[in-house]
Amino acid sequence: MSLNLSSHMSSMDLLVTLLLLASPVALAKSSPSLPAIFTFGDSIFDAGNNHFNKNCTAQADFPPYGSSFFHQPTGRFTNGRTVADFISQFIGLPLQKPFLELHIQIMNGTLKRFPSNGINFASAGSGFLLDTNKDMRVTPIQTQLQQFQTLVEQNKIEKSIIQESLFLLESGSNDIFNYFLPFQTTTLSPDDYVDSILTQVNKTIDQIYKLGARRIAIFSLGPVGCVPARALLPNAPTNKCFGKMNVMAKKYNRRLEDIVNIIPTKYPGSIAVFGAVYAITHRFQTYPARYGFSDVSNACCGGGTLGGLKQCGREGYKICNNPNEFMFWDFYHPTERTYHLMSKALWNGNKNKIRPFNLMALATNFTF
Ligand SMILES: *[C@@H]1O[C@H](CO)[C@@H](O)[C@H](O)[C@H]1NC(C)=O
Ligand SMILES: *[C@@H]1O[C@H](CO)[C@@H](O)[C@H](O)[C@H]1NC(C)=O
Ligand SMILES: *[C@@H]1O[C@H](CO)[C@@H](O)[C@H](O)[C@H]1NC(C)=O
Image 1 (cartoon, rainbow, N blue to C red):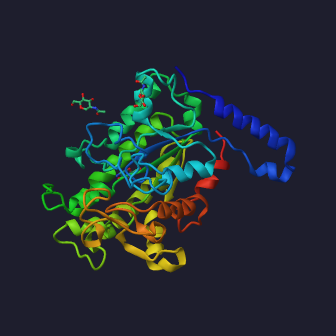
Image 2 (image 1 turned 90 degrees about the vertical axis):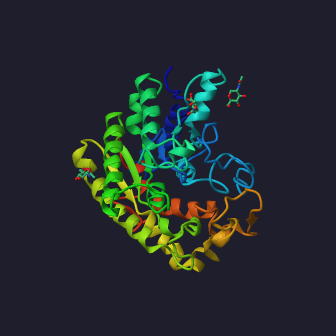
Image 3 (image 1 turned 60 degrees about the vertical axis):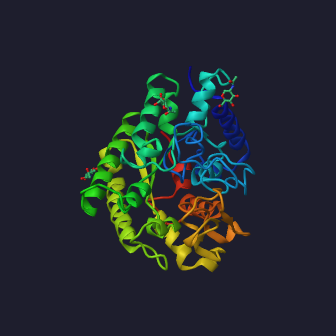
């Protein structure tokens, strides 16, 4: 089985049409050649993989998840689309389906081949570290890569498509949050713990390059110490963000950017961008009104202090009237509106938001 090329072909048809219509000046700028997106990471990308993994207890497949856009739960940990969904829409591709859904459909014969627009492998709750939320049976990034590797080795995805595709990579928030759990057993210092995450980042990049990835976008962590779920931690303040956790996230982010900067020289023929999600999110918190937020601290949907003690949708939860004015949807996750603003910044933002160039440039200005 090989990747269905039909949507690629139709975008070629579109290109031909554009060639006939457009002026030569406009032509020089456009070279649409991004057939697919392959996504790896955690909840900011997960389109429902956990939902199709019956062993996994980290779930958002019940109301009111999905209520603002899909009008039903999809397994996404927000009220609508995730960052991966928005980026796919900006590029003009249909949303990538969860790998596990496609896998089940192929096994039971309802689907003949993997779709041509890419695959979403992300699993909410997972991290770069194998132990992160292992008891909830989330799918760590290494396993996500193995799933992709199997498809590549079985020629279920064409090599030429992989080379032109966008690879989205984001994880680590759960690793860092879990470092502060009261029953955490690691003996590593914060610096050594960050190091252990970055070792896995390096391995991940190495592996996706070997599997053919050439166009890579890696996102920093947001201010993890500000999530409403910090109210679950005995040592975290609830009247302000958890400083120690944010210090660790910023350390990780700085070193992650160094790794991203080296990618084009370390891996010939590749390009990579660093999405500064921390800086993007920090602006929302600093100037909430400018972005239309009335609340950047509490979960719109949840329960207890900050709405952070109970998962949205669980017995006794409360929900706000205006999710669009809240930065956080549930105890850990942003609202669709926050994801939309974040995605726009990553798509066409300046160098404070994504560097050395934005996703729009990455999607259109390079051919392989
Ligand atoms: C769920 O667990 C069973 C038993 O451990 C295992 O055989 C199966 O592969 C798991 N399913 C997934 C989707 O991980
Ligand atoms: C195949 O799996 C999909 C996804 O779980 C399900 O929706 C569909 O009903 C299944 N079809 C058959 C024929 O079992
Ligand atoms: C990751 O790889 C970079 C080179 O790309 C290297 O400088 C750095 O030390 C590595 N980090 C870890 C933690 O292995």
